[in-house]
Image (cartoon, rainbow, N blue to C red):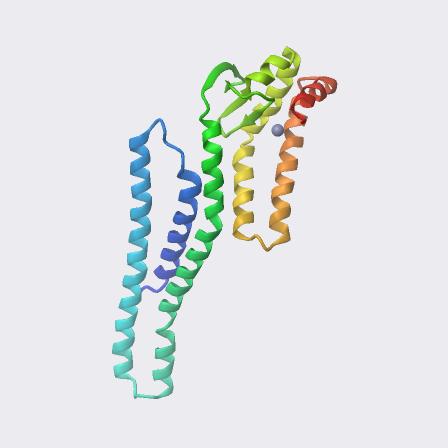
Length: 241
Ligand SMILES: [Zn+2]
């Protein structure tokens, strides 16, 4: 039986995927479920380790295939050269995989650093304010107007709550709840990831700007179904510095 060469690119893909996504998706999570978090981290890296072992194993298998094939061909013949050249393919794939991995890691480093800087902000002591359309709204103690919609909650600064009328606060919440329900935070993260991986492309830089702009328009349109335009404008004024 010949070595299943297709496993090599598949295994490399898996390693790249796992090591790229894990730092971005898993860092800073699981604060409430530490054991689950630890299990997921180790499973993730074990699977990447297994995939690496498979890629190397298949390459070695392919090497033994080559050696036995070469011994059957007349030395220096055309067939002999073909076998020799083909035998480099798995090792080339491994090398390319290794280089890609190094490049991607280099690119995502700043993203992970940014994520770490944002986390303390998210971990500011939160005081539950209300439940808005099924989404938890909490206040954070910041001395300026600030609102943030993550993938599952809305954070708004105490300052903003104190300085907005009830209608204006509703306008802000209708806007933010749209961000939460339509997963805008995740979309922005995905867009930034794409930009970090392909920074040379004008299109990937434009992607970030456009996604960030369009989600704001979508959220405003959502809010305007519930509140009047002047109210939304007044509420927005507080957040403009
Ligand atoms: Zn917004």
